[in-house]
Image 1: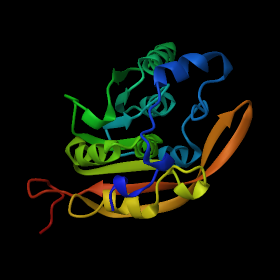
Image 2 (image 1 turned 120 degrees about the vertical axis):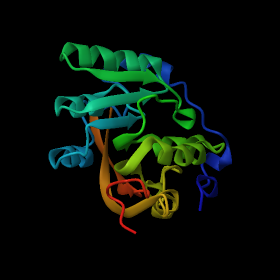
Image 3 (image 1 turned 135 degrees about the horizontal axis):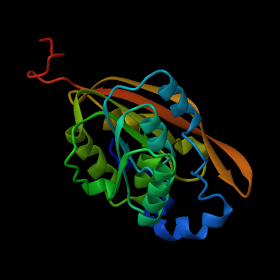
Amino acid sequence: MSARDIRVDGDEPYDVDYDEVYRDTAGSGGPPWDIGGPQPALAAVLSGGVKGPKVLDIGCGAGDLAIALARRGHQVTAVDISRVAIDQARAKAAGEGLTVHFEVQDATCLSLSSAPFDSIFDSGLLHSLVRRGGGAADAYLAALPGLAAPGATVFVLAVSLADGQGWGVTEGLLRAGFAEPEWIGTEIEEIQVAAETDGRRLSLPGFLLRTVRAPDASSPHYTP
């Protein structure tokens, strides 16, 4: 199964001007996915330790997860398609005296000189690309193996299609997108995804995927 197998909004492409979204919500707490910190399910991951030192946050938004990783001493690269969001993230990091390498990039055609990474985080990006349609999610998933070092851990947090909003991901799509031989030890947990709108805290059904980039023969972790 690929991202194209999921019907989204009547199969019409869903396109959002994220710069406009961040500008329009700047005075009201930000867009619904900006909850002022990492998603609760990912906060638990951070507490348990993250493989480093090089960490990538794809679709970082206003930077809360990237900054939380930098606080723990990781060398963090974080990208988002919105220049407005990246400007907000840079200001937050500077305010804490933290070094995070923020870049404005489209996740479907990433070019990162600092790759590969020891850990990669996707907090709400994949389900947005699935909703966008047009093969965006497939292009992103195809590029991920090249960003992950052998033995690297990847975390993907996504809203479930079961939420009933007409968009999201399924467990089948996640398992197909992170299948062997590129990925090993894939685990998918049902979680709740937090959102905030109009001062109200919402909880949406979702998934947290954890997987490992398969070691290659040149890796010290490789065992035939």
